Image (cartoon, rainbow, N blue to C red):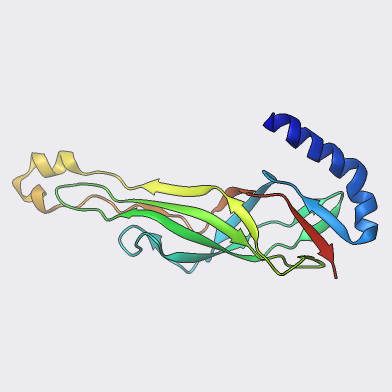
Amino acid sequence: MKKLVITGLVALMVFVVPAASFAGKVVLPEETEIKVKFDPAMMVDSGKLQAGVTIAIYLAEDIKIGGKTIVEAGAEGTAKVEEAVSASRPGKPGMIKIAFVDLASKGAYATASGEMIKLAGVAAHEGKGRKFLSWLFIAGLFIKGQQGAIDTMLEYPATIGETIILRSD
């Protein structure tokens, strides 16, 4: 059933979006794949962040429909730390899980009431454990595992979480 709905939305986009573009409306369908990134100057790791903390994210590439840019790269959004477990002794690794929450529209198209575009997707990482070292050497009991860390130099896949209509200014 879900595939049928998605197929219907794609067909609607092919036939209606060009006409709707002239009328100033564009449908941005659920599950549209996008890429987001973090501020490269930020440290996103399990030793520094706690669950519930929000982090700024940015759209890495323009979202285009029918050859038109609907949301420009650089649009700011929000991600939330869902889980953060700090590395500990003896050799236990840290872990971090970030959920993509929403994205502001940027460019010629905007949501009707200034609402955010809902996102879906996560970025997660588990650090390396060092339990073997901790058991091999008695001093190893004082060795921590590696923190879970998100590489802020990379782009991460996300999807549009809910179909939304955008209007041109």
